[in-house]
Length: 58
View 1 (cartoon, helix red, strand yellow):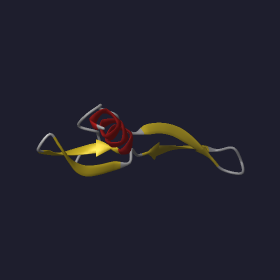
View 2 (tube, rainbow, N blue to C red):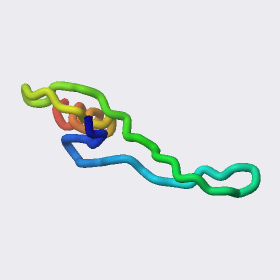
View 3 (cartoon, rainbow, N blue to C red):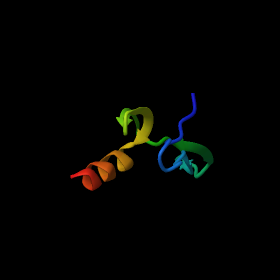
View 4 (tube, one colour):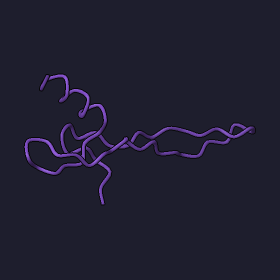
């Protein structure tokens, strides 16, 4: 199952997690995906897209 928003295409972010000795390990920060229905279709959308679509629809 992919962790990409179906509306805007946002994926994960990469960054470094630093230990006390400044050793870097790559960490992935996932997008907050929710399953919702938009225009009668069931999609996986990030919360930013859900909030924006609620603003446009109002």
